[in-house]
Amino acid sequence: MTNKLRVFVTGSTGYIGTRLIPQLLAQGHDVTALAREQSRHKLPAGCKPAIGDALNGDSYRALAKGAHTFIQLVGVSHPSPAKAAHFRQIDLKAGLESIRVAREIGIAHFIYVSVAQPAPVMKAYQAVRAECEQRIAASGLSATVLRPWYVLGPGHWWPYSLLPLYKLAELLPLSRERALRLGLITVRQMVHALVRAVDQPAETVRTWNVPDIRIYSAFRNEGAINFGIH
Image 1 (spheres, helix red, strand yellow):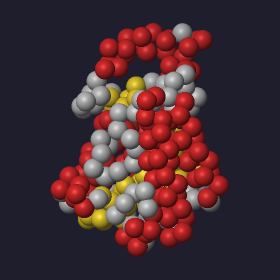
Image 2 (cartoon, helix red, strand yellow; image 1 turned 60 degrees about the horizontal axis):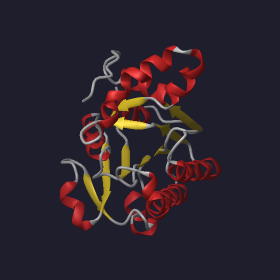
Image 3 (cartoon, one colour; image 1 turned 30 degrees about the vertical axis):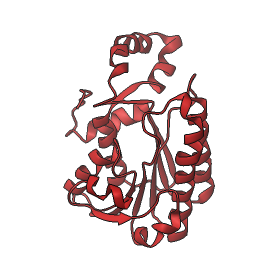
Image 4 (cartoon, one colour; image 1 turned 180 degrees about the vertical axis):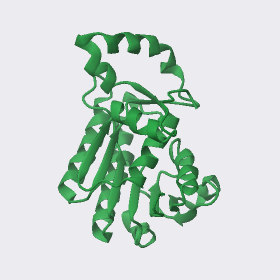
């Protein structure tokens, strides 16, 4: 049986957060979700609202105190090379502030959604996420770092047509490692892997790449592998 944990989530009204929080609540966890006042209505039902600014850790520090797990999900929606400045202004700032606050208030387990590395495109996005990973490693926090590449789901369908090419590349020895590292996962797989990370906290810093996310998400489906688009 899963131990009930207090979980603090940033990026709670986003693509992953709105799907993750109901699953955490279903597991019996006590979830506090950070949001701006104007976004309070977007929070999933059942969580406790924490009104603050993800770019200013001092605005939510007291609200996060006492949580066991801190999940950092803040990021620019629909990342693209044209958004390089936004990655530093939003993703990096929010990431560094969350790490600082988590360390200062004694969070037991920090969960960070990064990105697959290395990759041939989105260099600015990777650089920001890598910088946050480095800060996590230096912080002394116990952490789980997840490295998806592209998360398929509502509004994020365009790479679906590439799945046959991925399957072919995974069969070829010269391309297999890269195809797996930059593989596509579904939002359901991502959510299931995050729930597993919460249920089984890291003792040091562990990194889950795409193959790991697929494996750990499978355990959330009662042991059955389900890579469907849900």
